Image 1 (tube, one colour):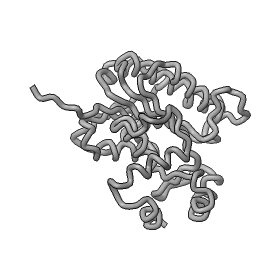
Image 2 (spheres, helix red, strand yellow):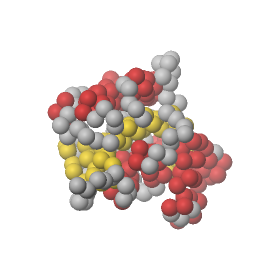
Image 3 (cartoon, one colour):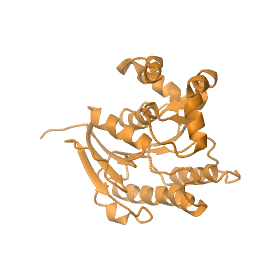
Length: 243
């Protein structure tokens, strides 16, 4: 009998910016044996490790129970931008979808680790006047109460897209324009999308976050990225190549 320690990984939201990079890193990672991508549409990638499941109604994930059985970890990147949907939809996508998926994953793979894309300023107390902060905080609290043996909550500040895209609103267009200066003046308030994604994957695959967490603020995410640098070219040189 062949025994393998390769991880069986689930990625939710791989059609999005961070989730897309997470999928790439997972497929490239030799420690990952299989990847199950679950999202509202297909990602359009063919790979021997990859299985795709299109699931359009995350308000009810019961149908995913069998697909989620015997998994080692999940990277959850499903979300939406403030202003792109109504407040009710924002809460449903941010809180309800997260909680429902986590419920089914826990029932199908009780020992699975969970890596969650939250956001800077997330407020578990629920007192923030900013809906995004309240809802991300509510989702965090629910995950912390869910009983995952290993939970990693990522709270990035401004996420630099790296690759050209159509920005969702004026604020994002402005931030992208001033990013070269912003990253120099306020380095702990920015993170590259690919670096964030790689950290989210690595923490559940390689355990790089075992000494910290469960909440990682932007500064701590950047520190995790630096610890991964021997595997590739320097962080700063990659930034310069993109500018």
